Length: 366
Image 1 (tube, rainbow, N blue to C red):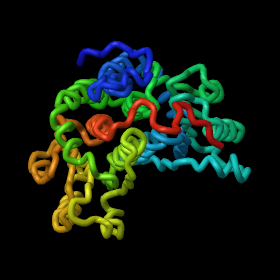
Image 2: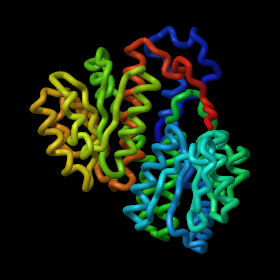
Image 3: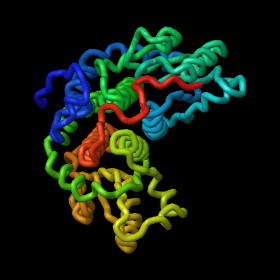
Image 4: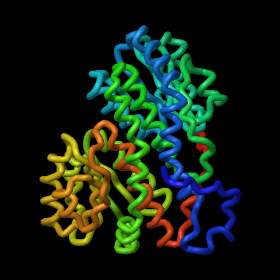
């Protein structure tokens, strides 16, 4: 495990004068291996108990309500439970209830609320409405004393500790990890638990290659517009990294499935246009070949997050990932490399990555 930096008590402007100041968000990025290791150690029993309740109820589908980074974690869950468990997983549209007063028949569903703070009124209303209709409800949160946790039948604590920076880093990977633990528990799969035990090690390895990230950020610091691509499990990674680049680095970003990208959006790409490809090994990697070929023809500047040597070597900047990560767990590791890139771009652009302009840590929406 990496040495965890001591917590910073203040993010006053005096702390940000040195370009190389260790920001709050950097400390929290580096806490992730330990957070995930402790989450597995401390929470496996609770996850297995929740899985037993879910199996007992045998829901016909899953419905997940979330916002922001938590919504991107929910996108991961769509692929995770769809591929590994054959479950239909839908993402809730909270405004159906909060704005339009629609009453949805979710009696046969498992309804999951995902929120770092557990305080967003719209997510809470989805859970309360689902419970009234007889659905089994589950909350995944970093605050087990939150309104969301109290409203749910089952509560799972991601245990990430206080996250002081506005941009979610360790809470996001903890949410992904919690979904992965729930998948392992629903399958009662020892091999899955063994793979989960290696995730902190893989995240740690990803944090040990800062020179690659710094060189990429130096080269790309003037680029104002980015496209970020993912597919399958790592579509969630593309969505989350687009958000991180917006929050921390003030960039205009758009994210696409690499398949959807070919259906029109690729038209905006010309010489030097930056495209970030989230492409670790797995079934989705082969689908990136056609995309990369077309991007190269157009002269795009390609930044690739991958563990695949042949694919990564075609990049203008290759941010390497550890080898041997199962595809279903790769988003937990891949996103960390992107978090570091967003941080370095923020620094080089003279921004405060801990406190993006006009944002607050807890956002309450209806």
